[in-house]
Amino acid sequence: VALEAEGTAVQRPALGSLVAAVPTDPEQQAAAEAGLASVDDEAVRLRNAVKAHDGFFTTYCISPYSRYIARWCARRNLTPNQVTTASLITALIAAGSAATGTRGGYVAAGILLLVSFVLDCTDGQLARYSLQYSTMGAWLDATFDRAKEYAYYAGLAIGAVRGGDDVWVLALGAMVLQACRHVVDFSFNEANHDAVANTSPTAALSDKLDSVGWTVWARRMIVLPIGERWAMIAVLTALTTPRIVFYALLVGCSLAACYTTAGRLL
Image (cartoon, rainbow, N blue to C red):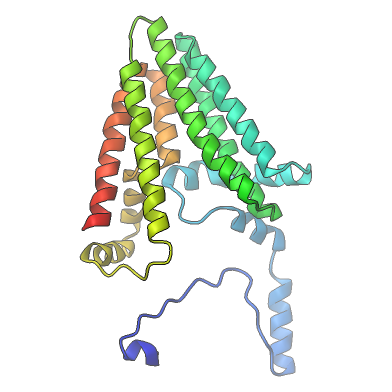
């Protein structure tokens, strides 16, 4: 309080579910022991397995059940890297289905792409649930995410050609746009890893908007993170054509890139 009175910014991190206490008398000790006994350790592990600040689609459509898949995997001694590999294989099968150029193939591709994303969420949740963290695992996850998405683009393009529509230019454009976004995001995060708090007017506005619940989700969705992006791709693949999928990707990712860039520069 004294620091804040002097104008010093003070951060108050969330303490989470498990908080230590140092009782100074028998009554406080009894209260602390009762509080400890009331904590459901398994519920805490499951809750903490889910990454904070995920996108809307991931938070509400995937994580409510993928955490239980992660626990199922942990009880069978599966590793996060094995789940990551399963996600890659599923996405490659989805790309192969899209490459058939048939409506049934497109529907199967959309479903398999969503299954691949569920597994993609599960591998990280499994790592947090079972405390199996590794640099290799993080690298594999990021690398395979790119490989899965670009392979799926290629599958869509092949399927479109079989249907008489050459969309390779659109597919390559989507790949280049996504690659540029990933490189810029990585470079920005690395450059600002040790930066102090952002005091720009844009950051101040963002902090104010955080107090309005729905704007948080809207701003997370507008940057088209992997969950929203893959959901859009899957639905459009099943219901429309590859050309429409790539048009939506190019427009959506371009708007997301402009929004993100404006927020960083202003």
